[in-house]
Length: 204
Image (cartoon, rainbow, N blue to C red):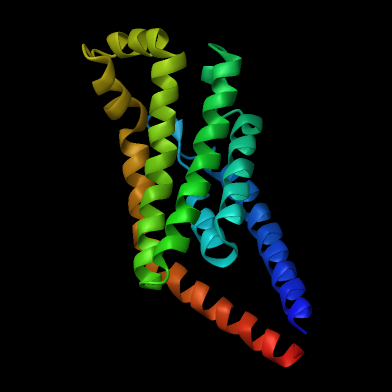
């Protein structure tokens, strides 16, 4: 009976991962056409948080990887691919994948305290990690080119341009959206978990 419960839990996680994977792909292609400033916004961060809440850190890590691959395929990273293809792939893959892992790890760690608190912190850490890794990648692989971009736009300080010109508006938008939607995510997570627990009890 215990093995059946484990198998059902795995099935539920796989189904959740499959549905959220499709959502991430659709959301990222939609988000690629919405731009605030230089780059498009990421609409997939909330599905990653939901994946963390419903499936754990490995599901959210998978969703972060899918997000990264779609970014590369959608052409959203084309400006950087033209400068350093390998550096672009490394940066994009790491920023999405680590964002998923960090968000999932934080949720698993904090959900024992409070579900709402865990979702909010996870929702904050996902965009912070995503943007933070992007900035590190910019420094390691694209700094000289970004410096030229900044000078062309009147920025004397390259780091200021990276924060204000490259990620500022997008990061604020993504962070606010995540925080604002957190209560809805909590409600959805609790409802889905109750439904899943009910299904498990009926199967016994």
